Image (cartoon, rainbow, N blue to C red):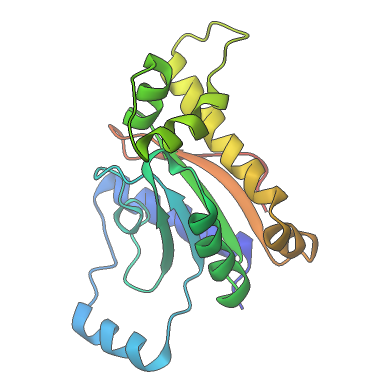
Length: 194
């Protein structure tokens, strides 16, 4: 059984390989797909990340098919459907580690700060990010400060979710925030570690 600590170690090691371009997970996709179709999935980490096409968890962490359970939404925010996906992964797949992975240069964060008018369902994304805007201080880079706060807010929401809280209280789940540096490829983890 994978622990949160060993899952985090795999992600950190994979990120180091990815940064330097020494990817190891070049497995035979067909063979692995067939194996997973027969045995079922058992991902070791759940990643909640932005839909941004530059943020691809399997590449960022050098992992293969079946290793990660990924929930993607613009701005890495969650609604009821997103929470349902996370609950499924944590409760039914017994994933020990959840990472909320934000990133630099997030367009959804920029739209929230710049006050861009959003229509339709996009408005819901902007409204979820707005509480992360730091109006009490004047940060050096308000976009990156908001992105960091948005990650922390999603982590806090997860920790207050009844299903996730129960698993955390049972010491079977850890939830962490992290930020992907697009230019360097580095993932910076924040909050406590398992």
